[in-house]
Structure formats: C-alpha cells, structure tokens
Length: 246
Image (cartoon, rainbow, N blue to C red):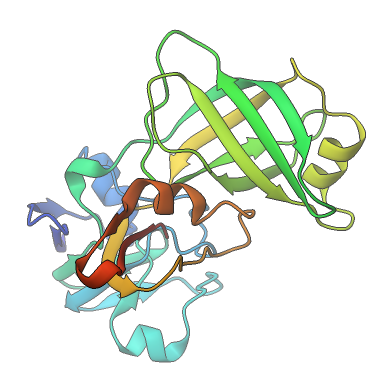
C-alpha cells in the first residue's frame, strides 16, 4: 500500500497508509486525520494541496479543476487524487486550526437591504454552544424550501454569542437571492454545514484596505478577515493580515 506523508503549515507531520485507488482524503479520514474539504468531486479546490514527491493519479472521467500547468507544478486535489507510489504532500493550513465541519441550524434575526445588490443577514445558531470558525471561512446554507445549497463567508469576527452575519450579493435568478428578496423573514430556520475552508494568511504592507474573495461567496469575503487582522505598522502604514480560504 502507498504511504502518504502529510505535512501541515504548523510543522505537524503524519504518516498514513492508503489502499489501492483510495483518494488521499479518504485515506486520511480512515486514519482519523481531518483535512479541509467541501465539494469532494474536484471542483471547489477547498482541499487543494501540493505534492512534493511521488506519483498521483486521477480516475478517468474525474473532474479536476486544476490547469495542466498547476498539476505539472505539483498542485493536487486530495478529494479526487490517489497515490500511485509513496507521496509527500504539503497542506497549506495548520492542523491545529482545522475545525471539522458539521451540520447545524440557525434562525434568522434580521434581513436588511443595504443597496440594490447587497443584503445583510444576521442569524443566531440554534443550540447552547456557538459554532467555532476562523476569519475567512465559509458555511454552506440550504435555501429554505428548496434542495439548493449556497456558500457564504461570515462577515463578522468569531465570537461567543452564536451570531453569524453575512453580506449576500444579489444575483439575477439566484435561488438565495430570490428567497432573501421575496419571502425571507426573521424567525426562519436555515440548515447549514460548516465551517468550510482551510485557514491561510499572509502579511502584506498596504496604504489602505485590500483583499478579495473567491468563488463569489458574497460581498463579505474580506470583511471579517480585515476586521480581525488589520493593525498599524511603521510610518502609519496599515499592516493588513489577509486571511482567506480555499
């Protein structure tokens, strides 16, 4: 059986065995090692990592959202990649900061139209304990009354009050957009899964706010990370700790 050597951004390293044709993600789960993931079909790149050595394979017909240049450079998707030989894989997040995703529910407290294209949603999770998350992470929300799920980053910083805030960009004919503008009301219960996304950060010098999200997860992708990580540096420059997820 191929041996997988997994190294995390905090220096933690683990060694596990993979069954033939077993994906890296499945092998890690079987060994009790949680890895960042979401779609698990090769589309969203939440699980994206780097192969430092060894050979990987993808089954015929597998959806792989990486370009050939990225694959040639060693980028890989643990949710659909299998080890053909012993491999060394670098994960771009700290193992100690990886929060396992789980299902939960939240009750809407307010829906506020901020502009023609943005709605602010404030909700409180049900249950006695808050759902922990990291700045830049996101959750999957089921559109009430449908089978559709949509992903949004939290706009507020983590806290102990069980509150989630989202800034949702309205899209023409969007299922969540239609729900928020036509029938959403305080007291509605929304089913959720998360938090999702690996936690990455980099320090950069800037003279103002900077940053951005990916995959269109609303207008809030940089809001919470900026609130959480901005501080002042020498000569009055802002040192913005950009925190984002894959």
